[in-house]
Image (cartoon, rainbow, N blue to C red; front, side, top):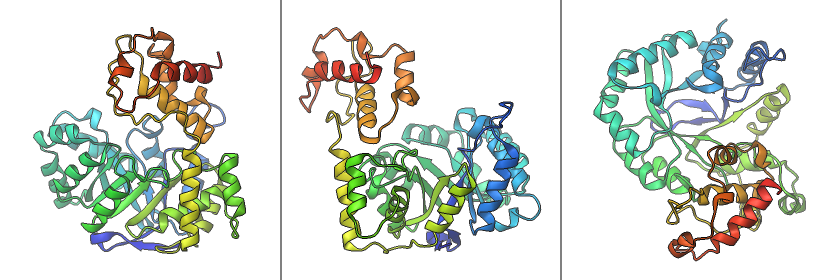
Length: 378
C-alpha cells in the first residue's frame, strides 16, 4: 500500500480510502447492509494496509456508521482515521449540530471523529450555516477533542468552491474528480488551488459512480492498443494518483475480490508515476468518450424554466451519459426523477422559447424528441 502525506496536516494516510456507501444488502432482504459481510470487508481492507475509512450519517439508510462502528471493535479503531459527515438537512441551529455529532460518535463507538465534513455544501448553504455558528461549532469541537479536523465535501461549480475554500481555515476537502471531470465541479483548478494552500484533497467518484469501471468499444480499443495492459479501473486510479495534490482516493467495494484488486493497484501507483505516453493515452481516452456525446448542452440553463415544465438540461445530461458510459436509463436516478415529476420531453409543445434563449444555438426541440425516443425506447 502506498501512503501519502496529507498536505499541511503532515499525517500519513493510505492512498486507497475505503468508502462505506455501497455495501450489499442482507441476503434475507431484511437489512440494507449484510453486516457480517461488511465487517469482514472493512477489516480485510484494514489488514491490507488501508488507514482511511469514509462514511456519512445518511449512507445506507443511516446504518453505515453503525456497521463501521462494529467493524472497528477489537482494536481496529486505533489503526484507522474515520471520516464522516454532518447531515446538513437535519441541522437547524447550534444545538442540533451537537446532538447529531453525539449520535454519530455513539454509532461509530468512538470518542472522536478524525475528519468531520459538512456534507455537500454550496455557497448558499455555507452562508446559512455560518449564520447559525457552524465555524464556531467546528472550532469548539476540535478544542473538546470530539473531532480532529474540520472539512467539507463539495459538488458545485468552481467559483463557489474557491469562495468556500478561502472563507475558512479548512483542514481537508473532499471533491468529485476523475479523468472525465477535469473541467466539471471543482475540477483540476480546484484540486490545484487546494494543493497550493496546503489543504489535503480526498477524491470521491474516481470511477464516476462506476461508469469508468468498464469501457465502451472505442475506448477499450485504446486501452488494448497500449503496450502495457491494465484494466479501466487501474487506469482511472493511476491517473488520479499521478496528481501530487491528491491525498486519498475513495473506493467503495462490495466483494473481497474488489478489496484485493484495489490493494494491488494502490501498491503500484504514486505521484508523478505516469509517463508522457500514459498521459497522452488518458487524454485520448477522454476524447474518445466525449466523441460519444449526443448533444453539446453545457447545462447553462438559459433555456429554463420551460413553460411546460420540461427539464431540458436534465434530459440532455441523461442522454449524453447513456451514450458516453452505456448507462441504462431505467437505472439512472436523474432520469427516473424526471419521469416521476412529469418533466419529460413528452411535455414539449415545440414553442421554441428554449431555442431562442440557447447561447449554443442547439436544435433543442429536435434533440428532445430524439433523446426521449432513445431513453424511453418508444
